[in-house]
Length: 177
Length: 93
Image (cartoon, one colour):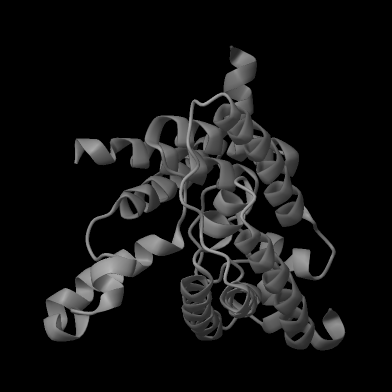
């Protein structure tokens, strides 16, 4: 029992342990909720709700009525869970900290400028969400949830993601790649 | 609201696992594209293998039905993946 608690409190799991745990989670999620997980869709649901508030006529379209319905969806609730779960995990393992620039490696390569980091995050996230919208899901909702069901879309997505990720990182890092 | 409780639980465990695997960090995400740290790849493929075996077993036993997967639309899935990869390399999430 103490071993289990130590394991839950440890700051890091091997990627294989984490991956296996996520695989098990996907099995249980399908078994008990008849759904698998996803993250990017929730932002589209929230976006739709905000749009309905500020510009109802613009929000009244195919996309937010049928494709990604606006409102407090299953995915939005899951996203809240993701935030709380990661928070609890980091607090328990003692790795929680406040940061305005997210990573040491970023500082080494691109400098400590906070605005630069935040701007890349902002525009990078727009690309993430846009790409996920076109492909039909993100790393969790399409690559993993689709992958476990052997959906061809998932593997096409993974291929595209790694190809462009590698090229973009090469261009961004230049000589430091 | 009660109907959404399972979503909160699944999300909680999902977030927990991602944090434990250190996938909440910029360097973990970007270094897979530099081939210096393959955590993302190991994590994703392990989860697909474990989840896939279990889910297909349960499906063949008639216990679960698969969710309607994302339709295969070669251009869309690929282009979406390409745009997503650019964002991923930039933002690191």
